[in-house]
Amino acid sequence: MPLFNVYPLYDVTPVKAKGVFVYDENKTEYLDLYGGHAVISIGHGHPKYVKAINKQVEKLGFYSNAVQNPIQVKLANKLEQLSGCKDYELFLCSSGAEANENALKLASFQTEKSRVVAFKNGFHGRTSAAVAATDNKNIIAPINAQQKVTILDLNDIKSVKTELEKGDVCAVIVEFIQGVGGLDQATAAFFEEVDVLCKQNNTRFIADEVQSGYGRSGKFFAFQHYNVTPDIISIAKGMGNGFPIGGILIHPNIKAKYGMLGTTFGGNHLACAAGLSVLNVIEEENLIDNVNAMYLYFISIAKTIPQVKVIKGKGLMLGLEFDFEISELRKKLIYDYHIFTGGASNKKVLRILPPLTIRKIHIDQFFEALVYSLGE
Ligand SMILES: Cc1ncc(COP(=O)(O)O)c(C=O)c1O
Image 1 (tube, helix red, strand yellow):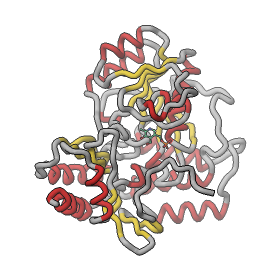
Image 2 (cartoon, rainbow, N blue to C red):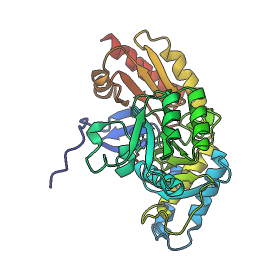
Image 3 (tube, rainbow, N blue to C red):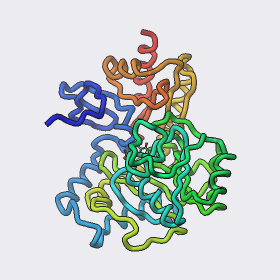
């Protein structure tokens, strides 16, 4: 049976990975500055993570959400401790889109409203309400287009005010650093005014931290660079270091009711063991400090490269903007220099999303290859 052909593929076949490196079937080593799309947080095959998953699957890989699961409780407590999000409650699911879908649904349940405000160039996943809040006509099917969504420009606070004051908006959903879009960020004043407007207009403020969360921005959550209090925070990607797990943190102003949300796989024993070991490693290895140190090192070199026109993003969620489209450069980096990087909707932005364990030596390897590639 052929595979449904929805992905343009690079001709590389990884069979093994360790730390910041991926290896193909010929044992060629690739430096992974893409992290499988911002997923690899604590590094490929981290020994503590592998051990935690192995131990758990030997005991109990899965049981449903109808019984007590102490690993969910441990995960929730550790997440509260490391994120500093005191008193939020946790609902677990299995992907980023599912997290946002549940976030939007919860906002709608609670406010009894149904329109969503989202932003140009945003990306929130491919399920029903999440994809409708995503600014890309190519991925919105007619069935999704029935959702009531208003897409606004980042930083256009006047329009946000006008829309929220109409009284029918259940949620504003935002990426504090746009991922797929190309690392754009609104101003602090904009984010903080949106937060206030949400509170004034009975609208829930959803922080989509699927990509920017778990330390990637240099703080546990990217919204923590600002003075805002989201009602719902969606998480996935780095949360499981490759194990499919997602979730939403829910502010105590939203009360749970039996049956309101639910899932078969979300929060299963194996996923929670993976998620818990990720948090333990982030803490034990001070990975957020490493993110901040590597950010400073990365930009200090990026600034010296004349072809780099703008350095975008925060922490290890970075973009280098050139004045030409980067698809050929990306290919050159993969095939000639064996370095994975990412692309964005903004075709001039090269995305850098490495494991949070990256060291200076790997950044040096990247810039050496970049300079050679640009000179060819
Ligand atoms: C900000 C953001 N939200 C949501 C998603 C969707 O996550 P998933 O692919 O796990 O459904 C992504 C994926 O790239 C993302 O970057």
